[in-house]
Length: 294
Image 1: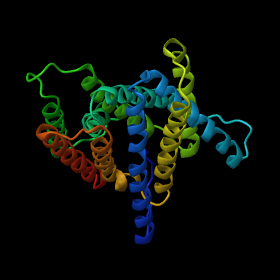
Image 2: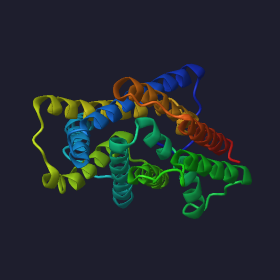
Image 3: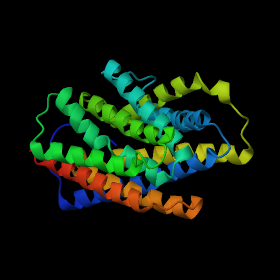
Image 4: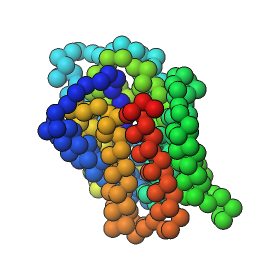
């Protein structure tokens, strides 16, 4: 998800175009998640993450250099961009590990605590004023996460904490994004991919297994779907403010449920549905309150 600063006014046609592109992105990105989960049955998670970042850079870096007509690039806010990229990498690491163990929808539901975490961090780090109603929504969101985790019923798997870690790391990513100025979204996407590729390349030789021909194809496809999905996200933000499109991100859960059911035989139980409902309701309410600045 991406956030842009500044207020803009858009026509209804432009807004509809933004909604279409945004929903298209959230329909595509879960395909990447499904491919990652499939690969995790026979491949180390670290190697899957390497494929996600390495092939992403192979796609985006040449395109950026060609389209921007530059021989190299350097972000204007390098320290914050670097920090932001590390948080995004940690979010990816946690999420890919969690889906290797949990169902897609359970891992994603836990990750969607990020609006509550980012609201909390906005109050502490950015000194943003958060009203009582938003604090109640944050509390409800955490209750939803506990419903999914069900502490006390069974031993909580490390992957469940990784799912929550996804949301926490992504919340820090959102906060650091709010600190950025005018770096282009495409540069930001390329730089994030480059940082992730460098970090994961330090560790992938330790766990590397030689992929089969089919696995190479899936690894490339995984990165291609991830890049295409983020491209549509960036494009949608040219036609509408990110705050207006934020609630559409929950459509990703719908696509993940479909993929999880048809390809992995996973279907949410009652407690996941209940926790999902609470978390989505809290997240949408927080988004609405942020839009009206209350």
